[in-house]
Length: 263
Image (cartoon, rainbow, N blue to C red; front, top):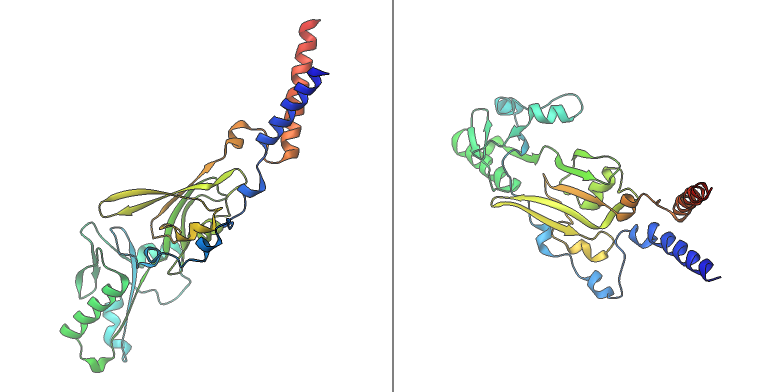
């Protein structure tokens, strides 16, 4: 009887520790301190992105008479759908010195500037050097796609591009097919480049307060890594049924081996 109790306790313990609990799979769970969740997202999350080396810009210069600005828009796609290759070959690359080369205007320094600051700088040069206010100059400056990299326990890894101005980490992960069942949602790593170097952040996506994290809203060129849970390393199964099947298989193998050795 004592052996049966020991066996049952061991069996039940293995079953509990091997399967993945539901609370580890649900995003943005509210804790008891509801007031923390009700607070406004920190302003650090809303700061505009400042351009870095290797960014790709889409710059479009318009005027009342389109013929006046055709020469400034030599790289603009006029037909066809936007795709990743089109963005790469037709966009304006920020070089190692922080400059982009624009027809006629030549080099314009954009390093460390926001998109709005670049727009104002280009408009100012055009009005000072080539046009008057009557020309109706209108400049649009956007990132040529929001680029990020995701790796680890997601359905689709690799470099991703989303064509929108702001992307949060949940949108990025959803665009990658979501985190797998064996992915660790409680400790997602985000690596972010700064002028002084790369910094690493950790974010718990199961906690609603993660919306206040400085990396909840991503920046272009962020690297996201989702670690595997211990259950994947153990190989015992993601659900209780899978774990039960694995344990039964192991016990059957052990019993068979024991009986063969006795004979």
